[in-house]
Length: 104
Image (cartoon, rainbow, N blue to C red; front, side, top):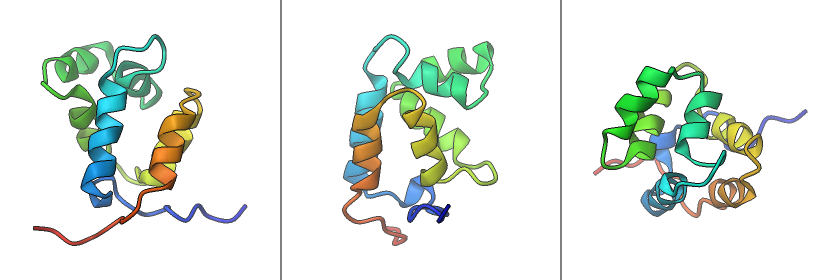
């Protein structure tokens, strides 16, 4: 299997608009398909999920924390959301128009 073209691309290197849309879609309360489900698939505990829920943008907080782990890149995130049957998120991530490593 060839490595995914986004292997090694960190969450923080996504285009800002792609990241915003990803968080917006994950923050919508959808049974078994929102940020809480993703947190479970990322192996976070119930207590950690409660802490993420306190944030104004829990999906952003979740992604920020998860992205610091070894091998936690965009390709890995795509595999996780595929397991949630979130083809909309897979498409969003795979069509990231400008994955960049430039920082303001």
